[in-house]
Image (cartoon, rainbow, N blue to C red; front, side, top):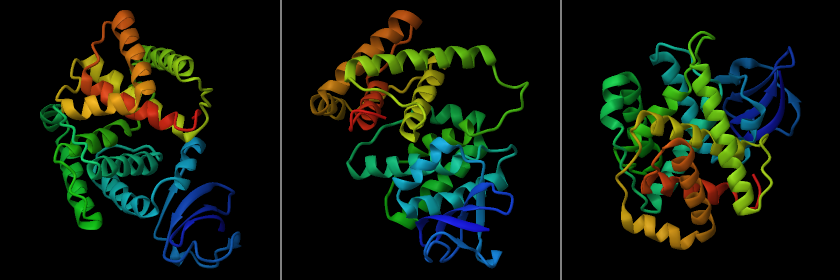
Length: 279
């Protein structure tokens, strides 16, 4: 096995003997100068294959300790949940956990009324998510609000790999069309040229897909802390104006009413992806 790129001392991007790229975890694997041939596989604790190229860039921005922590969570999920999970879960869940801790440290607490429905429909995912929240406190000393378990559970649910006969292909096509329209609004309003091959675009697109699922089910988030919402609108006026346009489009073209709380999340994501005037 060739170790080709260091993430940190214990995580690296590698090529196996068949030339397949993977992320490997193992004590000290990232310490030597790159590239090098790993003489013994005994150092390898876990591997992750088939991560999409656009997600690989997340490794350069995500805290390495969060990625290592999440790898153990993904291992637990694979051993617990009765279905296959996307290889990309390692990085999408790392991103979600990192963002959740960032929000908590800034005092941004958002209640998620989907919790009861998730408990009834996805009890295994909720239980696993609650264990993850407890583990986050034990590892990072960040006490996430209990409702954050719903967001983590949704990460598991949305990482499920379906067979070809399972997805609602028309609904998927409709969501893609709406995503394209929202992306066009952002480009016009924010003056950006969006590169859809980057991981930042994937992060934003995932959030929009979650939003559309909630709007389609009629279970949008609506438990806003008005002071936080007002503060964010004042702090990010350009992103706010852009989100107002998106909300108008979703209502006028699709009959969706985007709550203040959903708009709060959109403001955060639009500002995040447009911070450098590009994705």
